[in-house]
Image (cartoon, rainbow, N blue to C red; front, side):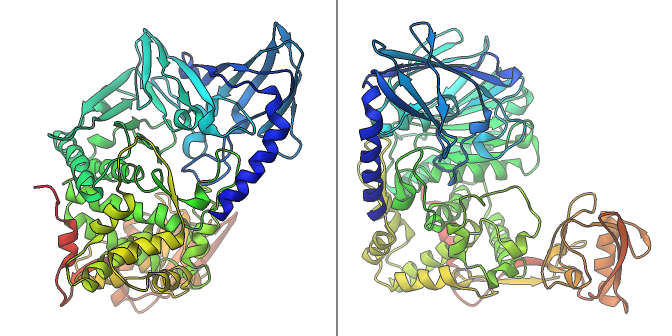
Length: 616
C-alpha cells in the first residue's frame, strides 16, 4: 500500500500540469476493424478538450502481461485535428508512449486518428491478432487517453466496425448492433481495456451455465475454419462442470457474467490473458480435433478463469499500480500466477477434463523440470524469477533456460501451493482445507468487476486465520532457496513421491534427464542442461546434432543410443555442428532412458481427495 500512496502523489503532480486542456465528458472511440483481413485497424477518436497544453498517452503497462510491452511501434499515421486544422504534436523525448500538443483557443473537441498495424510476430496481445477470417480486438492498442486522470474516471463511448456477416463475442455490454456496426454502452477506460472482443466469419457461442447458476456463462469461439469449431460434447460438459466447481471452491463470483473467449488459428500469437469478466485465449486452429487437445483447452481456459478471482479481483498491491503508465512490481507473481497455475490444474481435473493420472504426470514433470532440469536454481531463487520479470518475461529465447531460469513462479508455484494445501489439512487434522482459504481471501459480495489489492502480510494473515502456522517463514524459505532439489514436500505429504527412473519407459524417455539435451525435430539443441553428460561433452544450446554413432541423426537413432547405453562400454558419439564447424562429442552416459513419475508412499492419498469433484 505504500507504493500506491506514492503513485497517487505522482498522479496529483501530473494532473496539475496536464488537466487544463481536458474536459470531463465521454471520449468517442471508433475502431474500424472492417479491413482486419488486411492486418490493419483504423482508430478515430473525438476527445473533449479545453485550450492549453494536453498530454496524451498510449497504454504501456498492460495488466496481466507484467511488463511495459504496449505495442507502440505498431501505431502509425497519427494525426490530430480540430475545426478542420491540423494540430502539431511532439513525442516525449524520455517516453515514447507520451504525446504532447497545444489546444488552440476556441477548441472544445479534438479529433484523433491513427492506424494500428497487426503484428506478424510478437508476444501476447501485441503479437498477431488478425487473420483472413477473424480478429481479436484489444482496446488498449487502439486508443490514446489523457494523462493525469485515473482510468476509472475516463468514460468512453466505443464503437466497433467489422467485416460483413462477421459475428463477435465479448463481455462488454452492448448498447446497439446494426449489421457490422456494434455500439457499446458507455464504460470507464479500465473496464473497456479489460473487455476484449473476438470476431470472425466462423464463430460458435455455447451456453455453459450450470443448472441453478444465476450468473450467465458463455463460451465464444472464433476460428479460421468451420471444421475447427467441432467442440467435443464431453468438453462442453467439462466447461459446465468447471463453472460449477469454481463456484463451490471460491464461494463467490466477482463479475456480472463471464465469457470464455477462445481464438483458434495458426496465424495468431498463442497465449492466454486474463480479464475480470472474460479471458483472451488463443490456440492452434485444429486443437480440439487432436487426441489430447481437450486437455490443453481445459487447462488454459481454467487457468484464465481462476484469474478472475486471483489476479483481477484480488491483486498484489504492487501490481495494482495506476494503469497504464506506472511501473508494476512483480515480487508476488508466485501468488498471482503460481496459485492460479495450481488451481488451473486442479479444477479441470475436478471438472473431468483431466484425469487424476494426467494431473500426477504433470506434477511429476514439474518436479523433474525444477530438479535436474533447472540447475539455475542453485544461483537464482524463486523470488528472483518473479522480481526480474519486467523486460525479461517470455522473451521468446528458449536457449540456456535451464541455467538462466524461466518464469518458474508458475510451475514452482504448483508445488508450493500443493504443499500449502497439505499443511492446512494436516495441521488442522483434516478439519480445514484450501477451500477455507479461498472462501476467506477471495469471497465476499459480488459487486461486479472490482479490485481489492493485498500485501504479503495480508496474505499471511489470511492463511493464519484459516490455520495458524509460521506461514511467513515457510514462504521466505521457499522463495529464497537455492537448493538444487525441487520443493516436493506437498507431493510427499499428500501420499506420493517423485522419482526419476527408467521403469516402464518406452523408447528414449526424456533426453533432458538422461544425456541432458532438449532437441527440436531437426536435431537443433534447444537447451543443454548445465552439468549433464552432454554438457560435459561440449554440447551447448545453439548447436545442431547431425550424427549419432556414425550415422546421420534421426530421433529414432538418438533414442536407440540412449536405450542401448546401459549395455554399451563406450560413450555415445554425437556429431554436432557449431556454427560452420563439425565437432565430434563423446557423451559418457550409461544410464538408459529416464522419465519422471509419481509413486505412492506410505502416507494417506490426500492428493486424490484434493482432485475429487466438490459438486456431486
